[in-house]
Image 1 (cartoon, rainbow, N blue to C red):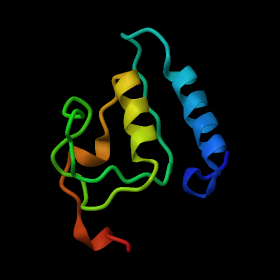
Image 2 (spheres, helix red, strand yellow; image 1 turned 30 degrees about the vertical axis):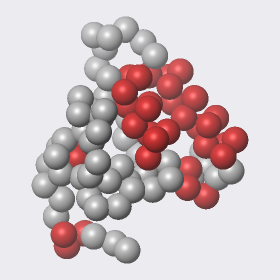
Image 3 (tube, helix red, strand yellow; image 1 turned 45 degrees about the vertical axis):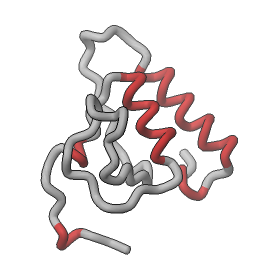
Image 4 (cartoon, rainbow, N blue to C red; image 1 turned 90 degrees about the vertical axis):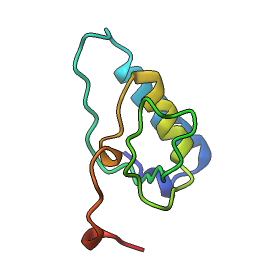
Length: 92
């Protein structure tokens, strides 16, 4: 699979469309997506309160909207925003 930040816009849409089709199943099923999607969602939770916690990091990447839209569609919580971010792992 391509790395989303390095991909062309068309490829990014295809990656997230594929993920959306995989997660489109019964609501009672447990669904977990794990992997490095190279996406930072930032701290702004406007209209994303049901999928984001209060511990996002300062910056976001250009894939933020694709990722948060996928999470909203699939009723996913973004785990990286639920718990406090440990500053020793911060990269620039």
